[in-house]
Length: 199
Image (tube, rainbow, N blue to C red):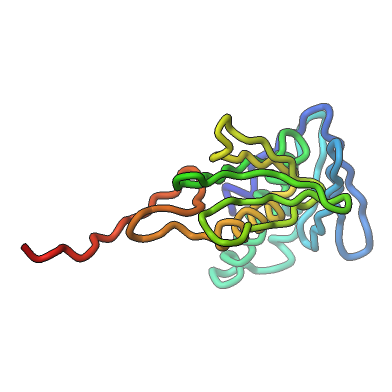
């Protein structure tokens, strides 16, 4: 069976885990300071919660009732691993949250934040005739470096954080010749060689 699916998910004391069982499925609730995640666990998978760990497992009688061949084992293992990895991310988001970084490169380029009608806007000065604006989700908090060329965004939801920063980056992708633009902190940009002047 799946080695990844058998991994125990450690839950700190300040992360609240609850198991709600229904007729055909179980619902796992993982609560942090500001977010409550709900994950649906369909049959035949079951969840077991101890004092400091959460485990997803298959009942022993399931193998006897259903003859598992190679065609059935692989999708079952994939689903088992998916549940375990997803729950690990939920516990991490409720515990410490997720962080991602954006860097802007160019002379006079920088980031700033403006509040308009109760919502925060991330503004990028990227050498254009207009400012680049992106509305930030309430769960996202941002910090800047001293020169405001590096922004650190933190959120409990990885998908919201990734989609927001990706949309900011897409407004001003790095130039393939000069490298100017917005990129993720560890993103590598392969620069092209421009045309050489004839002597």
